[in-house]
Length: 85
Picture (cartoon, rainbow, N blue to C red):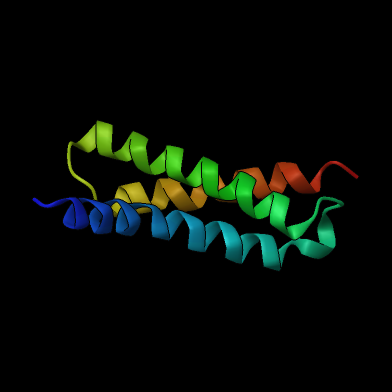
């Protein structure tokens, strides 16, 4: 595997967490005092941690249960971000 292949693999591993985190931040922007950018970053980091946990748990990436964990983790972080009112 070349360095470019490893970079593409890493980006494709992280991209679902960034997309879900951004979608939830944009959707929940009216329920939170935090900025969309701050909420997006928080959701993305939590989503990446959830994807790494799924990778460690199952040994491979791309399992549907890992993606379910990603959605649940990002949703919970969005819920907690909205409770700061």
